[in-house]
Image 1 (cartoon, rainbow, N blue to C red):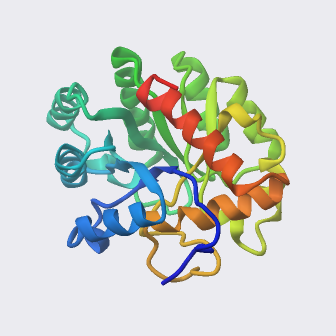
Image 2: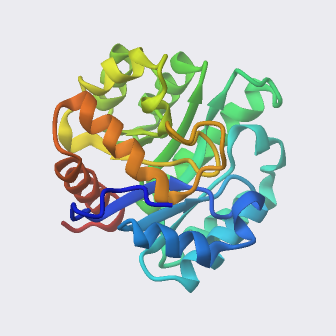
Length: 265
């Protein structure tokens, strides 16, 4: 499928949050990476969310150049985040291709795990992020007040609000705590006007892009299996919202990702 105009030279981009470790994609990782590279998605973070996906994220990152691991337990899997899981995660976070802690946070929408269990795990992830001086990748759904308070109290000053879908006011609150704001395919959805309004308020040096593949495929692929190659459509939609070129936005977000995750320009 030709997803960019071959007469225009695409620029390199960085998908900061993808799940090549998910069952939907893990069976054919080299193909998804190859297709991403064809469309100049040259770097990506494979994000863990439970014990198995953390192991897979490490495996993928160790086997491929320019692919990095982020390790943690997402809210719905925190019921499995016991003392041994904490010890294992602490050890894994010291591996060289690991660039972040997460995804972690709170999800009060699905109600699959008790709030106190989620909160305890979130606080432990923040402790690890602080200990190893790694950015934290935060999942926040219907839990703004608690996420904000816990993050503020933790003293963690660098991280990402993943697949942001909140208000401009919420975005500013997290930016004031030192966070980056990452936009997924949601920004391309027809009814996501509030998300686009929030995007307009974000300082350029705090913007990131992601796919959250295999979920949240951007328009015009909404409803289909997402993959890292499709970050191009996230960039296109966000660039249109911000009234800038897709090339410039790719350069900005890639540079931001380099500084946050790789500690270089």
